[in-house]
Amino acid sequence: MTDFTDIVVTLDGHVMTVEIARPPNNFFDHALIRQIADAFAEADANPECRAIVLAAQGKNFCAGANFGTGREDNSGSADFTEEGFRNTTGILYREAARLFANTKPVIGAIQGAAVGGGLGLALVPDFRVASPEARFAANFVKLGIHQGFGLSVSLPRVIGQQAASMMLLTGRRLSGEEALELGLVDVLVPAESLRAEAMKLAQEIAENAPLALKSVRATLRGDLAAAIAKATEHELKEQQWLRATEDAAEGIRSVAERRPGLFKAR
Image 1: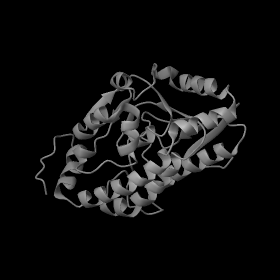
Image 2: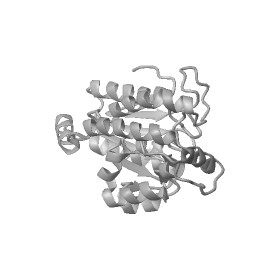
Image 3: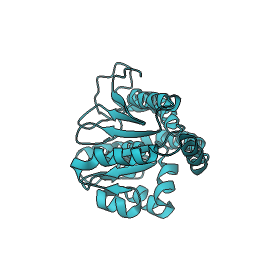
């Protein structure tokens, strides 16, 4: 298997674990998403792998995007800069679309925050195992921008249009228990059991006939990958013009300062 820089990939029996290794918050950029997509491609090409566990080190599964400077030599700043947003978002979304094109079932082990684009990443798996302390939020309207990472498609697909609209238009944060009630989380377990329960579900799936698994999953997912790719094109256009507004600048400041935004519709 490839020796990645920001993820740890292991194969245990028929289950591959792809672990994000940017603790404590695991902010993502296009380089990280590309590595995860490459690992998924390796899983697809490996006949011994029948299921994947997507997990993360640290206190948070993924607290959102790192738009830093947008350069390849970015030192890892989580600053939401104009240069970073302009230079990397299109690349990032092309890599994100690859995640939904994989052919093996994926189980997400979600602890702490899965916020913004981190929620988008948490919706890549077929199933989510989470702890009560997990937090889920699509807080884009609080930032003054449009949702991204294919959430326009993936979120309503999982929890339904009405519940997705509630999350996207309020920007509210859900606890693990609330996410379980909505169907955003499939299994809720204590934090200390999170990884073991995710692996247990992956192993249960991996016990089944691999060709049948692939066939059934492909039928269930249908044109999801193509729909995500199309949605991210629209999301990016909306994000680009909204990112240039005064409201977006205020939204980013207000979220950083943990206060309500003083928006002016301009």
